[in-house]
Image (cartoon, rainbow, N blue to C red; front, side, top):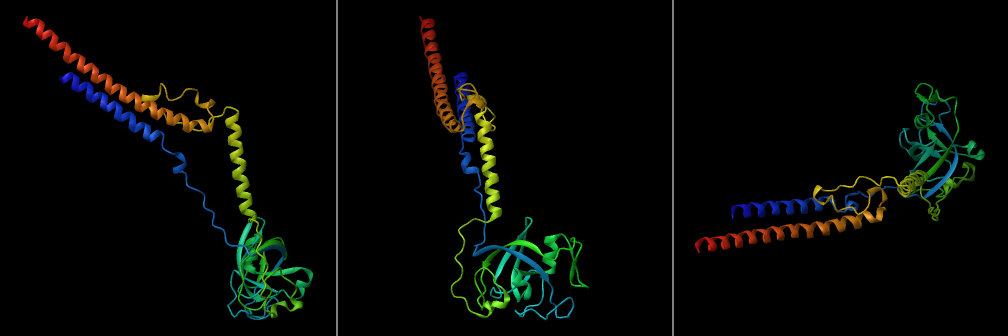
Length: 286
């Protein structure tokens, strides 16, 4: 009886161990993957223009025209626009670099007639062009002499005051003095950097699928020792991705049946041993 109990305990351990392994190996991998969360600001307007730079601190140096029109002190991130409402917010993109801004002043003046529709603060301009802001001259040094750059602008919030809520127009039009109650319709397009990221992901996915089609490894597949003999009906490299889940489910079902069969077989074996002992005892008594 001690032998039977030992066999039964061993079989139970094997069955439980197999079941635990199956649960670990056949868990839903998709539930473990974290969905990509892309936080994107609402885009109200997109466009391109030529940007210059300024730094109006009221000192009268380097063409300084006085303190900013918004009443806010000159600072990094402040831009001047010839037509957008003051306190409009957004950002510019230059050679892959992104810099936020808010409209805190008016300008450029006459240059806006030549298509220069945005004045960035000198510190932001220096960051974008690889230069350095010179606080003595209020100029940008070390950027190869760049004073104008082509940028992409993105508006994420319109200011509440006077000004045109659309693509910028020259200062001479006087649009900055009028209230615009019909802002531009936001574009339905995705931002350029988000498009590039999505394309990179699609390219990687296509490469992985191509590798699988050519017999490449679809990734590591965990197999417990107990079910190693029957979990895979074909080599891992030959299985298609869609078959992986089906094979795992089949392995789970078979593992359960096998565990039950082992326990049942041991039970029958133990019963047979007990009956055999009783028959021997009767013969001896005779």
